[in-house]
Image (cartoon, rainbow, N blue to C red; front, side):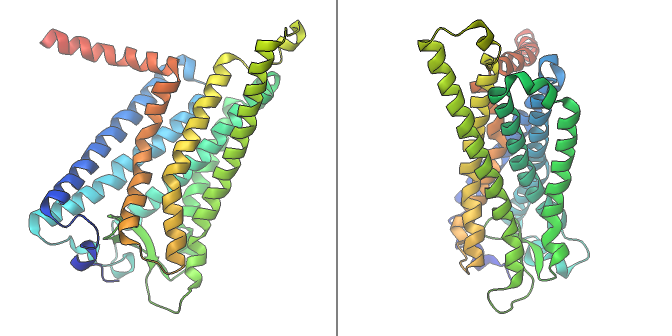
Length: 335
């Protein structure tokens, strides 16, 4: 599939200034993803308070986001810097994964798709964990254990990456290529055939899987938020009996449920444009400009988690502050 310079110029990044700004945005995104998610891992793994099923799930989410900043975005930065420096695209961006023995997108494409699916499944598991804590607080300790959570995390990673490579496994028509519109490694048809191709039906597995999990996550969050709202009303207007007070969610559980709800809304908003783009591609639309914004909106989601934790979770914020204090003291001493 020929993805040469004319295709690039359909995106509003053809001038040197715009390209420099785009590379600067990508570089800042890498910095934000790495610093934010390394901070999350440091807080979760280095603080005993977060050695819980919820903490394990947050660590899994941070690792998936970290992989995007380590593998996915840097490849796009390299391709764009190479283009600016030599005035020609890297050779591997001009052909697909079937045209050579090794193509960077053979690795980067499944990594981005797999980590996105891991993020969605992890948010779903976080929502389940919080809903049990809110709706069935007495059963939380017996139902939600660290061992079960670890098994679910492993299964989510295995299942997500199996789904990520399934388009190439189950269809000889689907290949990976560096898309000149999105500036990322995307799935594409390796041959031009009659439309619609059966291969696109396999690609539809991604939005179907994602929207199924996200839809279920939203529904569970709505149920949890309704229960929290009812509990708040009872606490304000009714004198609760002593035996009732043992069967209610704690303040920290309620706060955590609201945090996960915010996380769900952020991820749903960032994923929706990509899902619309995939469906549009199946229907035959190219949407070059839209694909660029859709995929990079999704990529920016990898640095939102730590921001949401810092705003919504006071304990996370305090632990992060303690980790940063020694660095600030060293800077002050050096000054």
